[in-house]
Image (cartoon, one colour):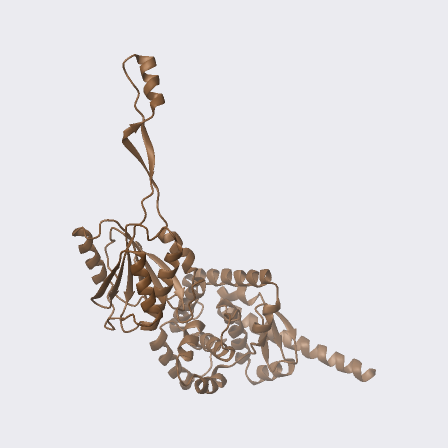
Length: 447
């Protein structure tokens, strides 16, 4: 009995020590990066010896007291970095993994993302000697995906034939905490999970808005953090819902000079003798969309498979709108740095034929040169000027966003549909709509 009491007391002492160490780490991080204080303060602490070191579930940091004390005794900066590592997992929604992901690769991609930011921060609280192996990996990934978000890194690694070998090699280089609770937390009620995600999204937006006036790290680290916070604060939306709103018919009130209200006509004759009152009647112009352009960026940075999938999904969604094709002509334009093809769909039969080509993988993508968006706008403007397009409603431009935008606003509505995660370095003109689509490698119609 006495031995059991001593063991309990010892466990409590270790747990208290662990909480004290984590509280100290939070304080040091706060002094170095004051804007992070609200996010850092969201976590509670709990001792759990079943974990090798640290674990989290977007709400609580679980720690192995003995291992935590060892790490702190070896180098306190390691604990600071681990605390910040876990905080970034929540800020970037890593701990809310998408359905069906490969756990090994998602865990690795999430760790690379967070360590990429921390390694760039020039603060005493997190500084460790530069790791050349990591820097080489960062350079490779930056050239490949531009924005080092977990989603982009995951898709890049999964696309490699040797991804299993890469995962086995890279995991020990970046691993810090245990992610097991990310996947078991799905047992919680859906409302609770959504509430947690909304709270962390709010934290990400608050941090993004506060960084420009503060000093949460300097130089490259701050730039990395701002870029990835932009990605977290601008998640991909519902393409189906967006497309429905973008293509919905617009009813405009007009008057008919050849029709009038006979009640007012009779009233005028009654009151004034020979002076009728004429009130032109209003009617609604419910004409469907006349012309519509779908533009595919066929430059070398865009995959032909992804382009075909986008076109297939877009046409399938539009086909669900039973009235869309009744009086609509669609131009499917392919362009890299010059116009490669313009295919016109003038009927449902034309659309079904193209959808069949896409399903049978017979659709030919033309281009794979540089990226310039301006030729399309010039080409379409010429069609409008020559009255080959007389009722142009809008343009959807599917691209990764890395190209030259036109400076002047066209006479039609334009939306740039951007693949991948949000990149703050892409500056879409203010006159255009920007829609972030996320990944199209696993895109499904229900999006």
